[in-house]
Image 1 (cartoon, rainbow, N blue to C red):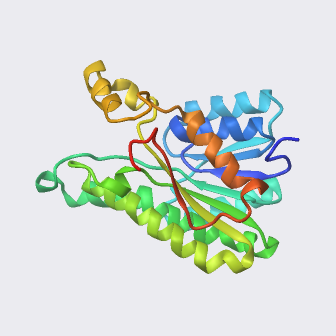
Image 2: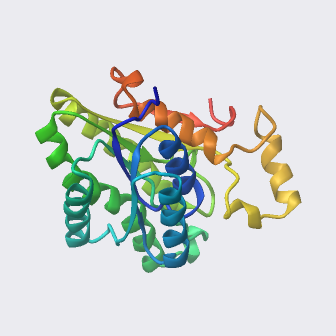
Length: 248
């Protein structure tokens, strides 16, 4: 039996990168897929069509989850279209890298709103149907940068560290309602974003990784499948690194 058979998953920011990889693996494990996108309309529509052609119930929603009214509307629409919401993956994220002395308020706010505020608003809206159903799994995508910090990424590191504290708090608040919340911290993962890096930069990254390779979106997705499935019903409030040993 597929591990996510009969479950509905909402994955934010899933028209590309890690989010798309998670959606593909979740679909292969039997989940129905609701996903959000902000500006990549063509990519999102093509991805929705690809999933549907494979027999997966799937729908993409253009939504800015950093706005409370859009987050509430999104959850209402998912429940209306799919009938339930079992899994939420707060994956949407951006970077606006620069040294702190050059970072402006807009760059700080944009990252915090997209990466952290959206997770707060989506989770707040999603726990209502989950509490009614007395079950649910919430997975927050953090980063090893949220654990270690990184020069030139004070805004990104702060948002991802915030996700860890948010995860632990939600796990404590909702555990008695049979709703679990965990965080996943990817390291150097091969995506469209890292594909633009030159070979020298990639080689330097590999030197810091004990497994001597970059991770794949499937490496992240496989962990998310476990945390979303009934195989992890006694795991909550945890942050699990997917980084090839870069952070121990």
